[in-house]
Image 1 (tube, helix red, strand yellow):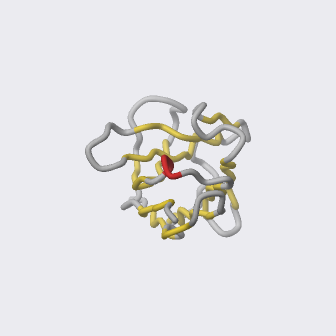
Image 2 (tube, helix red, strand yellow; image 1 turned 90 degrees about the vertical axis):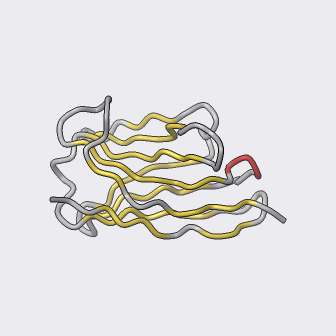
Length: 119
């Protein structure tokens, strides 16, 4: 049993920055992959970023160069640093973790945190 709890969402102006947190109820060392999806109302889910246990990162083209995903093993928390935010980044953001696979269906999900980019 693993719980993922997200925080850090809110309202930010275009060009601003925001850091999302995904805190786990146990050690995150063993997760093969942890990452982030986002889904805006009425739209399909969009994968955004992932960091593997080996430290490799990958990003969707829509966020590459602006977002950075990382893990803090001591704090048992994954972060998504979002810079140069755009109105089109407005969405609900969900963190996930996979026990063994680096792709495919996620094993655990957070409850989501809302990000609104608007003046």
